[in-house]
Amino acid sequence: MNKTWIIAQREFLSRVQKKTFLLSTIGLPLLIFGFYALIGYFAASSDSEGVTIGVADKNQLLGEELQKDNDSKDIKFIFQPNASEKELIVQVEEKKIDGYIFIPETMDINNHQGLRVNMGKGVGLLTSSKVQNSVESILEQKKLLSLNISKAQLDSAKKSASIEITSLDGKDNKNITSGIAYGIGFVSGFLIYIILFIYGSMVMRGVMEEKTNRIAEVIVSSVKPFQLMMGKIIGIGAVGLVQFLIWVLLVTMVQATLPAMFPEIGGSMQAMEAGDVPPPDMNSMQQVFSQLSNFNFPLIIGCFIFYFLGGYLLYSALFAAVGSAVNEDPQDAQSLMLPITLPIVFGIVIMMRAVNEPNSSLAVFGSLFPLTSPIVMMSRIPYGLDVVPLWQLIVSMLLLILTFILFTWFAGKIYRTAILMYGKKITWKELLKWGLKKA
Image (tube, rainbow, N blue to C red; front, side):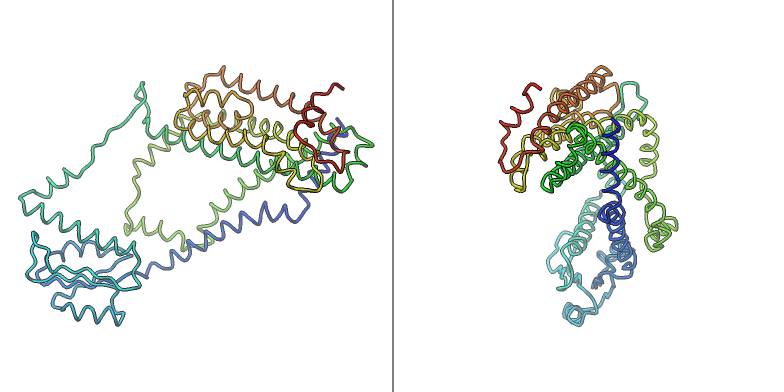
């Protein structure tokens, strides 16, 4: 055990002290957040830019309603009641305006003949659609009002029915609770999916490097191959855990300091407080925060750590066995990795259904089957122990632990034989033969 710990320390320190670790752990997240901050800065500093639309509406058929839309930062309407269409075209060509709406004097609500909505070459499809939708919406309202349908009746007809779904005890909003559980389950399962691929491959590459550089020959002269394999798995797993914790810390710090470093990004919040921008639905936000108290976060976090470690240790043993069997040719590694990566892919496929139907037979099977349980169970846990019975959780954990022990023993026997074998292309048939061979 002491030798395994020494190897784990070596693996951990050799990777943490590399410049690539610092760049990938600290530099890459900061670069991504800097990129988004730059986008936010330019988005905030471009508030003064917009599209100017000239409006020739002598009879004020649409003018009053378009005036209400003039508060938009994207589109500004300039009213020129007596301008002719030719004058508007000249203004567009001289780039004084970006487009125009021409409403002839003879036009009425029931006859739209002569109406022109033209945009210049520099106006994008989205802005053109906004202008078109504004005009069509005003014409629709005017036409309904001309049929003696009052504004109150029109608003009432357009108002959508609000149907609230609650649980059987009537204490919580089922839509919001299910939405939060869906989000937590999806993110948790997807994180473990990424972790299994990234750090499992890292273990395999580490074993391959030591084998191709003949370092393993020196190391196995003083330690057992199984101790070497477990040391590498534990050391690289510790690197992954530290990297994950640093990312969480960096995300928290950047979110707290970004508005102070770039005041322009906080401009939208100040505008919201001043009333220039309509605030979000605070009632819905309060409902979301109130529903968060219904989630068992200690259980969710505890299960995430368990399935993160269990899934990593299980798959890393297999990745290490494959790495020990591969020589200089990377294509050999790809062919041997396929049977290992398929269950991980199946796990993410089952998870896509489990987050929507956590009680389905496929979701239950995926959360119990050890090769997919680290991903699928984490997509079900946020729904609570009412959906995931305690016996299923215990059985899932026990099966994962037993499978990890079995696979580690199996991979250790492969590792012991393959790590010192060179110049031969190894197949899965031979790997199975070495793993099942009696000591």
